[in-house]
Image (cartoon, rainbow, N blue to C red):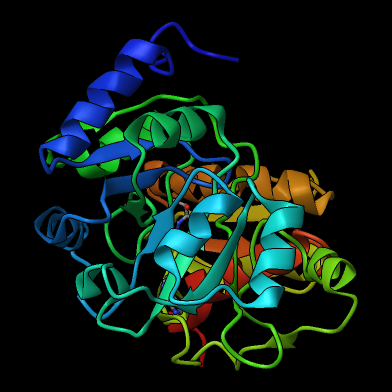
Length: 326
Ligand code: TXA
Ligand code: MG
């Protein structure tokens, strides 16, 4: 599992705690994607996250905590729905939005009265949070609008020396970001599909959850157009046959991202994901990065079936493609 350069031993976790303590930035693995962390109580350190990412200050961050018992430290009140969901699904790829406690610096929440909180399941993230003791504010460790990192090498390639320390916990197991749910209203509403399928949320709650509006919904800035995007123009196709035809008819450096391998024309590069939605999710961002490394001008993608993690994968592919669709 761990590579030789793996940094999930105690020494490096303690180094990371020291970096956070002096207002620095630490990239760390979670089961979804790598995060770019700062002490959530340190407004200046949090401001550095926005500067390094090039992220508009109105886009709120997620505060990472060790476990369910910590949510009460960051929420003004803990709604019953948030308690049920976190007791059942934390640590895990679920983020709950609650009303923000007064002591949390507003910069963390982009000035909003609410706060997103999550307890990640990765053992390195858990060790870091346990040792640090406080909340760690962290967005995905990529420049704003670009593909999220799923390895430590991705983080270094994207952020370079702008991050003080990178903890290496190997490739991320889930591969797409957490599911974000708003627990502040009467009904739980999914703001961003992610690592916990909606079916699972509904199973825990015993009632249907709502869905936030379409791709232009302002509810979650992460749902803005041209998010999660590689440099190549991304076009979505419904079927493998259609995708092959579109790529074959195009010019320039063309690639296909497909759930299964098929014969493709020689001029077209084939990137294969997986028929299984969870396996597709695990490799999605690596494939989008490959498209960039290959210098592709065009990537024609076929999403997986839209159940389970397939909903999150299709969502990310739509956002990657959005700026190019009319
Ligand atoms: O899996 C994940 O969630 C990863 C790992 C590192 O934990 N984090 C992540 O963070 O994806 P980021 O910053 O890339 O995306 C967080 C999303 C943003 O779209 C943001 O707008 C939304 O969470 N968000 C944060 N606070 C919110 C709030 N109070 N209300 C609504 N949306 C919020
Ligand atoms: Mg992000």
